[in-house]
View 1: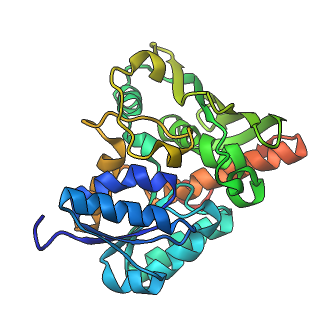
View 2 (view 1 turned 60 degrees about the horizontal axis):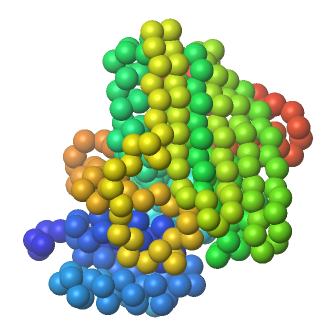
Length: 342
């Protein structure tokens, strides 16, 4: 690793940090602050890095981390994103924030404005844009292969994340819509354009010890296309899977992770992942590709495929879906200033 490699601060050491860590270690030295109450995981990272001949330093405070790094990767629980991102921007750091960018519309918009004012870069980690199946979908739409889009269907399933109680608290996490389905909400907007109306329904069952939840979100795009996004947090034996079927005037494209997976990933710490993260091809790691693209942009390279404004839009649509869940009514989205100017 060269002396010019960045020093990267990782704030948080929960399950998603395991997905980020291999890519971070390929990019630079890593400093970890386990703000989310998992110092034992941070220590495990340090031990693994030492065995591999790489560098991880574990620190005791956010201030100590910010003083030691060039850029920051925020992987704390959703409700803590805004506070940590604000602190990092105030310290003059470029920032990657795990999705969602923030829990509320106001916080997401505020973070974007603070980054702009500070002259720093801020990107939300909408990693599904980097998974090969979804890259293929974007290319098919962009090149006109499918024609004008008409109906888009997305399904994402996995085990209910039971080891960390805040996931089940909709006020803290946004529940299945904000935590899981926001990925497909973002993809739907990425390929079919701006969303003007949102409707949603959900159901939760099972027991306190073994909950299950499902939700359906219907998006009406400004183009007239309709996206149906379905999410399942199921029993603990349910393996993670994704599907889509996208139809336009010239053809259709579909994907099923169960049908397409031709590898078995060796997960370093499956007990920390809680059954709700996908296995990824070690030879084509979307998390690593995502972080590489962000770090290259921080260094003056090409702008990445996802922006802070995309993060704001995804939070706005997800919160509209949560409002629809509460009211039983569709929610109309007025154009944002950015959309009007476009």
